[in-house]
Every structure is written in C-alpha cells, then in structure tokens.
Amino acid sequence: MSYWRVPLDIQNVKIPKGDIHIITERCKGCNFCVEYCPRDVLEMSTDFNRKGYHYPQVLKQGACVNCNLCEMICPEFSIYCLEGEEKPPEPDQVLRKGENHES
Amino acid sequence: MSEPTTDYTDTLTIPEPKENLKHPLESYIRSERFPHIWCSSCGIGTIVTAYISGLQKSGLDPEKVAVVSGIGCSGRAAGYLRLDSFHSTHGRALPFATGLALGNPELKVSVISGDGDIAAIGGNHFIHSARRNIDLNIICINNFNYAMTGGQAGPTTPLEANASTTPYGCYEYPFNLPFLAESSGAVYVARWTALHIRRLTNAISEALQKPGFSFIEIISPCPTLYARRNRLGTGLDTMKFYHDSATIQHGADTREVDIEYQKKIIVGKFVDKDKPTFTEARDTFLNKKLGDQYVPYRRPNNGH
Ligand SMILES: Cc1ncc(C[n+]2csc(CCOP(=O)(O)OP(=O)(O)O)c2C)c(N)n1
Ligand code: SF4
Ligand SMILES: [Mg+2]
Image (cartoon, each protein chain N blue to C red):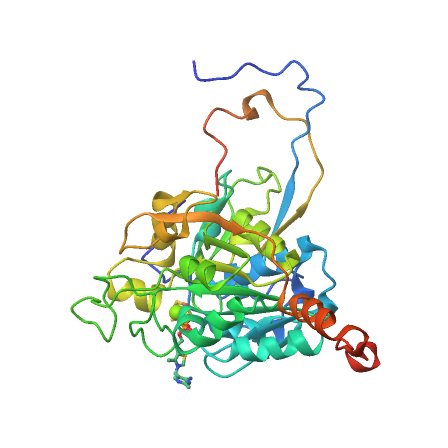
C-alpha cells in the first residue's frame, strides 16, 4: 500500500522535537501557523485574547518536529518553537510520500 | 481544526497574559511599540521576520547595518526593528539611504518600503540609485496599492484590479519591477512572495552580502484594502493563492515576469551579476585620472 518500508536503521534515526511557545496577547488570529504547520500540530482556540482574537493552541502535544515554520510565518512575533529532546521515531511516523510541505 | 464556536457565552473568560515568554528574535524588534500597526493577516510582519532571519544568516554585524523606510504601511518596518533605523519622508528612503551608505562606507544599508514609496513618488531615486550601483539593499513590499492612505491605485496595480481610485478596475499599465530594476542597473534582482519564507530569507541573506544595488520584490497580502476591494478574502486566502499561482523560475528573463491580475506569479532569483559599485568605480576612475593627488573619502575618526 502507500506505506514506505520501515528503514533498517530506524533505531539510529532521531526525529527532532520542538516545544511550542505562544505569546497569545500578540496574536491577531491570522491562522497562518495553523494552516501551514506541516504536522498539523496547532488549532485555533475558541477563547479570545485581550485584543479579541482567537489564537493558536497546541492540538497534538509532542508532534512538533521543530521545523520553525510557524515562527517564520507569524506576522506578529507571537509563536516560536525551541528545541526539545529528540526521540527515535515510531514506525508509523516515517514520512510518507507527499507528506513534506514546500514553502 | 475545530470550528470557532458561535456561542460565545462560555468563552468570554479573557486569559491572563502567560508567564514572561521571550521570542528568539526579541532583541531585534522594538516590542515595546507593539501591537504593531499591521492588520490581522497582513504579510508585512512576516517579511520583517524574514528580514531579521536573513540578517542573522548573512553573518553581518547588526551594529553595522542600517534600515531606512519611506512612508506607508510597509514603511513602518524600520520603526519596529531594533537596528539603526530611520523612517524618512514619502519616497525619499533611497536618497537618505544613499547618504548613509556614502557617508559611512562601513555600513550595509537596507531600504524596506512599499511599492508606492519606491516605484511611484520615489521612482526617480530608484532608477538612479540602481544606475549608479550604489551599495544598497532594497526590499520592496508590493501589495499592489497605496495601502496606508486607503487603497488607491499605484504603479504596480494590475490592469483590471479594483482600487479606491479605479472603482471600475485599473486601466493604467503597471510597472514590472524586476525589469525596471535590471534595466536600470541592479546587480541582484529577485522576487518572492510573503509565503516563500525560507527562500525569501535566503534571498535577503544573499542580497545583504552582495556589494552594489540589490533589489528584492516581495508580493504581500493586504487583506484590508486590496484583497477586500477585490473580494479576494483574508490574508490566508491570498497566501493560498500564492501557493497555487507562484512558479519558481530562477534566471527568468525579467521582461517576461509581468504580473497580471490574479494570474500566475513568476518568482525566483532573476539577476545576480558582478559590477563595480559606485564607490569602487569612483575610486578606480579618479585614481587613474589623478594618481596620488586623489585621496579617497574615509569616514572621519574611523566611524566613532
Ligand atoms: C509627500 C507625500 N505625499 C503623499 C503622502 C501620502 N501617502 C502616505 S503613504 C502613501 C502610499 C504608500 O504606499 P506604499 O508605499 O505602496 O505603501 P503601503 O502602505 O502600500 O505599504 C501615500 C501616498 C505623503 N505621506 N507624503
Ligand atoms: S492596510 Fe493592508 S498593507 Fe496596510 S497594514 Fe493593513 S493589510 Fe497591511
Ligand atoms: Mg503598497
């Protein structure tokens, strides 16, 4: 099927892990980070910040791979990710064709 | 993603600001001036992030970099950067930057400003700075209109596009900025959109390291005026449009990279060539003519 084979050296492969930090008060709810996160880690909150905007929050805890895309695309300097502890990938985390995003 | 709820009664608890979070680029921005003026989903903030990342990547000493802007939404960029920066008058960012670059040759001077500022009121300065190959790095944020003053048509508004001064659609021919820059003499010419953040960051880093007149046009969403008047949706919708319609063609002939209303956008690095800068040409020429009599300009007191 569409799965690629599990690499033989999977034990040696480390998937980077990122910790996401969100300065909710700066957010103006543009949705860029939620839309373009290649791992769909984020979602928009139902809560508002003080400016009256919905802001992003982490939907899939632990799924961030520290690619920094959210940080780079954010027009408000309101989200960033820092390197977390790397961990070996689960077999089902191996990239499937067409899964990596282009920007 | 869950849809934002329409029943807000139980969501009106406004959260207290979280513990002191410090953005990694905090030292480069004047966050005490935040919230910045840019609208929700405007692309200018993303471009400022790309500029800072490009500057970091270039390895230049931020103490030796200055940013000049003109007037406009894009022109506010200089004011939010914690670098030596100056918000000049409308259209005059390039002459001011020229003065800085010639007066202190150690500085790398960037201009971050809008399409109207650089190509309309500042158009003459633009072609002549490019012709003289002054050592400047120009970041032109093209949102296809004069955004700050209410969305009037400007020199880059595509034919057919609605603007507040062209309610039936624009009938003026727009500038093709990369072609204008190349034919005026720029040594580095590229175009990206606010969505191409990684490539844009690399381009900014390259352009900052390039001696001479470098020019990057960045197509950027203006949801409040251009997109609203043309019923093109939010900034995110504009970003999705860029995703679908931008094609990368490095080395494309700049004569062929015109932008038509809501058609394909050719992006990439179009020109990268070497040519003596204004200062180099001046020094070589006058040295040849005057020999030892010629004393090249040096900034007094070595810059302090
Ligand atoms: C001498 C002068 N003329 C006109 C104006 C009014 N004005 C302010 S911003 C602007 C247009 C800015 O357009 P652009 O450079 O494209 O920036 P944007 O707001 O679109 O980012 C104009 C005409 C002015 N401030 N000064
Ligand atoms: S008016 Fe347009 S260009 Fe200006 S800040 Fe708003 S969205 Fe950005
Ligand atoms: Mg403009």
